[in-house]
Amino acid sequence: MMFSERYLERLRRREEAGLLRNPPLTDGREGKYLLMDGRRVLNFSSNDYLGLGVSPALRRQVAGNFQKFGTSSSASRLVSGNSSLIARAEEAYARHFGYEDAIFFPSGYQANLGLLSTLFEKGDVLFFDKHLHASSIKGMTLSGASFRGYNHNDLSHLRKRLAGEEAAARSAVVTESLFSMDGDLLAVEELGKLKEEYGFFTIIDEAHAFGALGEQGRGIAGPVADIAVGTFGKALGLFGAFILLPHALKEYLFNFSSPLIYSTALPEAHAASALDILETVAAGEAARASLREISALMKEALLAEGLQARGDAHIIAWEIGAEKRTVKMAQELLKRGIFALAARYPTVPRGRAMLRLGMTALHAPDDVGAFIAALRDIRKSEGGNDG
Amino acid sequence: MDIFAEIKQILIAILNLEDEAVTPESYLLRELGAESVDLLELAAALQVRFKIEVDEALLFLPGVWGGEPPRGTIPHLTDERLGEIAADPSGGPVLKVKDLVSYVQWKLKQ
Image: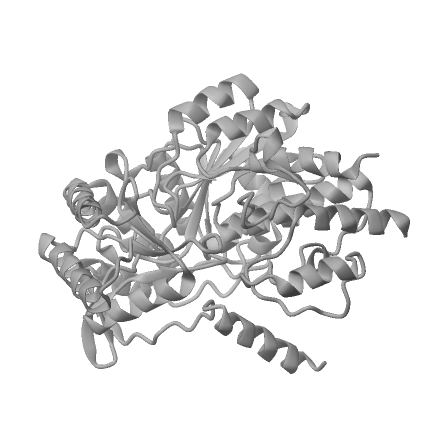
């Protein structure tokens, strides 16, 4: 069989299973709206939790930074791209979030991959939440370490798995603080107790929490994280990612992390923008409060409709189950001017497809009302129950 | 060596199950709640425990990994079991615990 036949066959099978990914083209954003097919639709699919991604003020700042510093670093950090401005921004991020040091990466995927694949090796044991992001799973498998999954957010299962191991000295726990698909929060205190008892190292992905949760947007896992991963592309309204970590490990990554060593560094303008954003985020209590309120309102409204809605913060998962039905619901919502992501296998477990709603501080109570009205209309026209 | 008993212990640890939940007839994904990430760990655990090379596409059977078509034959399954699978009306992932046992037995014989 030729390669092309193999690929086509697999795509066909995916389509049959209702799993083919075929994202719509978007033509731009206006605040909480997406522009697509010549119309404006209400967007519940972004990670722009504070609305900074569409902020005119930030747009001007970032444009000014590119004007001033140019368009590219034109080299890796390990060659001539190791600018003092990037180093200064990293120091500022470390200080703000309460870690020894920080290191910027071109993307969150690359950060998790570059971190886990480099820090661990054969003989180490990684315990991980089974709903961990694909980038971390990939990083773990590339590391050569053994891995032991525990059921999502079930720390009693983690305890059992820890108890079954001998070499705690070479153990690490990898988890998220706000889970990207389920929308629930890590039990930080409980993990802290286990950490005291077993002495494992912890790596916590706070990509969906930094900026949006905690005092001054510091996230929630500070008390238990040895290393934390954050991204600029979500609440921070930019692009790229950062790892917060001890000094020595930064040096280690500089020396051994291939995805970092052989990538062109983010441009200086990115670092300058990151510094601007840090001030905005630290002062963003009002936006965080709005986000909290609107998220709670949406979840309550979904529950009041009798739907399976979960989520402890600004990500709300409405589990529908069957893949095709979930995609159909997303399509029907879109017809009514609402864009929501149908998350399917392999992003979530098979048969547990969901609509994943990403709330933003830009949403208003009327938007929740519009969502619920569209939902009622769909359910009425189908004459069924989608919960 | 009781291969089923060994595999059962591995599954109990990975999936946090009660002892009696796992039988040779249990469906791995449909009944025991295994997700694709569990299969990743399971494959690694079988390699270590039985010192065998594991071909995941074969071990976990077609239909488990995003609707993969069967490639070639499935040498570790009997005709009877293949018939059972073909007759399965659900179209869902057909993998059972006994299929893992068959795979390990087949690999150990090689």
